[in-house]
Amino acid sequence: MTAKRAISITLGLVGVASAVFTYRTFRSEMDSAEKRVSTGSRIMITSHGPIEYTSVGDGFPLLIIHGAGGGFDQLRRFESDIHLSELGFRLIFVSRFGYLRSPLPTDASTRAQADAYVALLDILGIDQAGVIAVSAGAPSGLQFCASYPERCAALALLVPAAFVPGQPSTAPNAPPLTEFFRNTLLKSDFAFWLATKAAHNTMIENILGTPSMVAERASAAERQRLDGVLMDILPVSQRRAGLLNDAAVVTHLEPADLPRIKVPTLLISAEDDGYGTFRSARYLAKEISGARLVIYPDGGHLWIGHEEEFQKEIEGFLRPLGSGANRNGDNGG
Image (cartoon, rainbow, N blue to C red; front, side, top):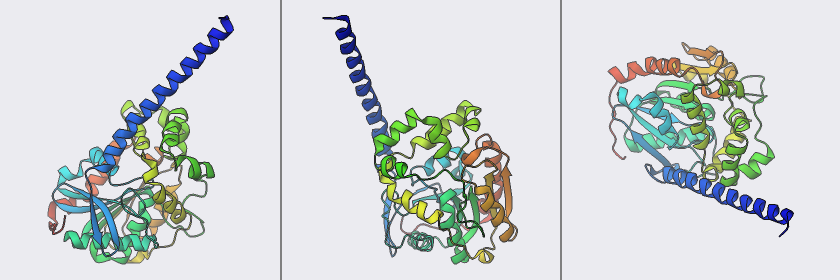
């Protein structure tokens, strides 16, 4: 055998071994992701269709509304970071329309989603809840509190997507949902997973809306959180319908009836959020009476570097609910 032939065979074997290792790693991480989304939730059949949800803690209820790429499973990470259930709250995590086991209905508008929240709370026997809405979950959170003010006890909007007059979307310069992302990464769990490994910084910047320089200077714990949030989008194939619906909603945002929102309201964003949510946070703070606005100078869409400040803001804002409010029961969960 010639040396050239031997080198070719060796390289071929290395390539095969690398491919086998890559696929085994993918399969292992996907097994974990699939296990995560297949356990711990319930399907409630409501007058507005099936809704997937889970409930954690015992106390005054908080409805947690996830952002793009989310689901009931990812909000557990939110709870592990802030420990609200330990502060006397019952957290109700939902999967919005098109995410995981909550189907995408014909009418998947923010108003329809708000109606679905009410239908779920009715079955659970909850008359009033605090609302925490994140990113692309903000439009339906706003709609819930504006359309059903008597059901909303307080409203926290974190890096919120929202209508701003004169702007076609919350963030005209936001990382675009390209044809490649729609047609490749959203259809294939393997393609999305591979992109997180081969183009990690690009995914952090374009999917998580966090500048690469912010990610690079983050602490080890913060980098772990960034990586965890990115990997928690898997299985992306089970979130594709919701992601595409969110893209349509966020690029055609409609105004909510903000004067109807009279409850305590907290708005948090960052100046360098890749999705530009600081614009909508500032606008909402002006339009909602008494709203508290917190804009960090940096930190991106995940407020990296401000976790302690962020937790104190949330805890301080919600403490009055946990300390003195009526405890609603659960008749159906």
